[in-house]
Length: 213
Image (tube, rainbow, N blue to C red):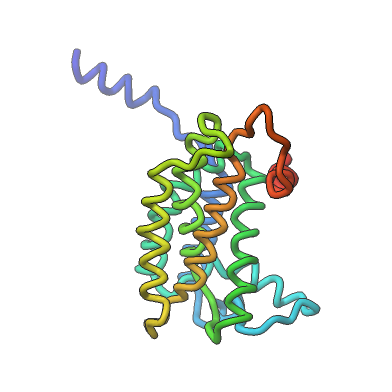
């Protein structure tokens, strides 16, 4: 009887796809990581700004999908697939893509302006998710004048660590980690519930514009 119930329970389960953008991001990252070095280089963000060339924009948007090796992919995708589906569910697929690729553009441009790295990897996006999470999780419970202690601790731990390591010549773009974290902090702060007696700030209007479905 027990095993029959277990079998019936297993047969009743269905695999569903609730976060298609997150899963597609993961699959594309895995495929690109398994490709040759020439393919990876063609999608890495350049260390110069050339907005009048289409390939520059392709690199800028696609560099989070490129990873140096499977360990690099594993490190980033572990947190991406933990946090990404939650944000995709809350924001919707379109707004989720705006947020992810908006962060990619921000960190790619900053990297081109101040660094000589050819930028790859989704670590900046992951840092954005980490900083967004303490604020966005309770966005409807806190007002524009409230900042959770958990957010301050997360920012201190993650951003502080990157500031300490920013001068290390370890092949990691700590600057872009900071940019991703700042993007997450700003979006998280903008997602807080506005006070009833206050007017909407300009940055809140900008967030709402990019959050339209």
